[in-house]
Structures are given as C-alpha cells and as structure tokens.
Length: 114
Length: 116
Image (cartoon, rainbow over all chains, first blue to last red; front, top):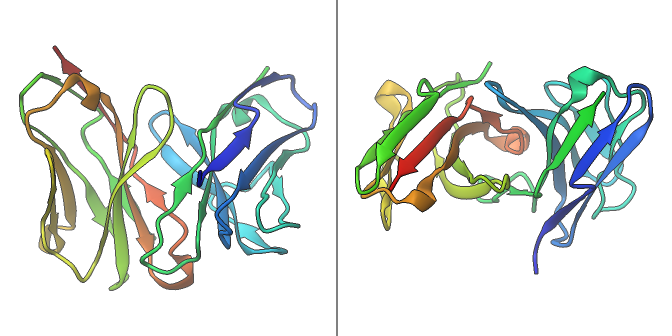
C-alpha cells in the first residue's frame, strides 16, 4: 500500500531533550517536506527536500534540522525542543514538483514539549 | 507573497443542509495551483481536489462541488445535502508553479460541524 508513515504518532518530552521524528514513504517520491499545524494558523512548511542530499528551509525552520540521506526517509530533528514547538507535525511527499503531482500526507505526529 | 484566507472559522449546520466554505487567495503568479484538504477528527489530511490557474471550470464530485473564480480570487467549496461524516476541518491551500510547486500555503482552516 502506497503511504507516508511517521513515528512516533504521539510524543511528550521535556525542554532541551533532543528528539527525532521519522518520516518514510514507499512511493519513490523525490519531493518531501515537513509542516507544522497550529490552531488558527493552518499548516506551515518547516523544511523541504527536492531529492537526496538536497534540502532547504520553508517558512518556519528555526529550531529544526532535517536530513535526506536516502530517498525514502526524511527525518525531522529537534536538537533542543522548546514549549513553542508543541504542535501537530505532518510529513508530506510527492513524486516531483510537477503541477500534476499530488502531495500525500502522513498521519501526523502530535508533539508536546513540557 | 502568497496568502490564503478562510474567513469562516467555524460553521455549524444540520444534516441535509447545503454549506459553502469560502476561500480567498492572493498571489502575483500567473501559474498557480489551488487545493482543498479535509482533516477529519482522526487527524489525517485527505486530499480532495487540485485546480490549476488556467482551468476555471467548476467541478462536481458527488455531493462536493468547487467554484473557481479568478476575477474574485476565490475557490469556494460547497457540500450539498451535508452529512454527519462531513464534520471535519477543511483547509484551502495554494502553491506556485515550477520548482516551488511543492510548498503549500494553507489557510487557517474552517471547522465544519454537521448535526444530525
């Protein structure tokens, strides 16, 4: 089944404790990205990747890191989480950036930073 | 800069009523794409429709229909004969053409509640 998976789905952590949220897709997609969803703000892009070893900042990259060492995986790293990073996080992927491509979203990761 | 505005924060209707969700966008691009996503209570994002800026034809899919009007920069979504299962948060989104296609600019979302 074609899908985007994220782990963990729920995470409660404390300020300053490094964490990684994994994202994996099995559709051989080139483009992957991370969004965060906050009430009243919709979803905002954090980072994106056009292909392996090619990443760039989105609208709200502060406090996050990413890497793209393999085509299927695009982990989101919070090296020193803070309470303002409490949010619902979505990973997304699409075959490329052609206008005919659909972006598929993962199920979301709900992160709470105490 | 691109912007998407969904002025209706919450809408409440009774089953079988028709409901229209408004979406107004801002962009300076001539090539762009508009989307609607549904987020049910379970939290996942479900893709509903994509429209490119060169195709102003309205679209109907079952009880769902979309009205794209470039003259008013609007891409409104109507649910006919609403059902309880339509209760969800609905997001309108916009992306640019070319290599920036992948970045979606989302509206704030409209919470739709359909009462039995």
